[in-house]
Amino acid sequence: MGRKSLFRKLILTALAATMLVTGLAGNDDSAEAWRTIKKSGVTGRVAKPQVQFWRETIPLICPGPGGTHVSCPFDQLNVTTTDVLRVRRAPRKGRQVVAVVYGLQRWNGSKWVTHSRSKTFVRRIGHQQKLAKIPQWNTRPSTTKGHWRMTYAVAWGRPDGRVLGSRLIGPSKLYEQYCYPTQVRCIYYPKYTHVLSL
Image (cartoon, rainbow, N blue to C red; front, side, top):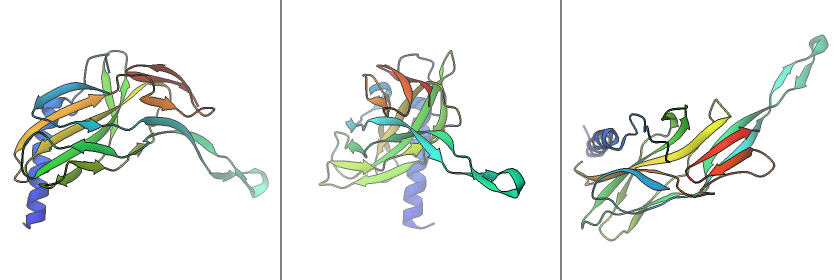
């Protein structure tokens, strides 16, 4: 196994372990939803982008009368982060590695359930670097209506796979998540967004 493959395997194994601690691998039963939901070990700061709910019209061509074809577009809910996620190093010297998983959660009436999640983004933070930038993420949930929140599972570690700490983060203020005007009808709450219709 090459050095790069070993490095990635160590980090992904470490993240899997920390996800069990932070709760992303399971479900958070708290109705309270950018605050730290769960934390373990030593962690850095995270600058979180806004999350936007918007309507995406998917162009489709459907069979029409007399063997013709007609346009039959349909609307799809799209949830996206509006900027990169900035993860600062944990307060420890030396090289560090951060791993991030975005999650879109929906309230099912009694608990938050992860509806979709991103791949694991892994970035290095060098000796002289202060932070790592994680790419934007977007997802298209199959269900439109409901109470939604975006979460971030972030783990800090060493290049050899040792974990420094982890945090599961969710929204805590109005308009950290927002709906694109004229496209999506929503009611805003500090810790989640209630999508009414497209």
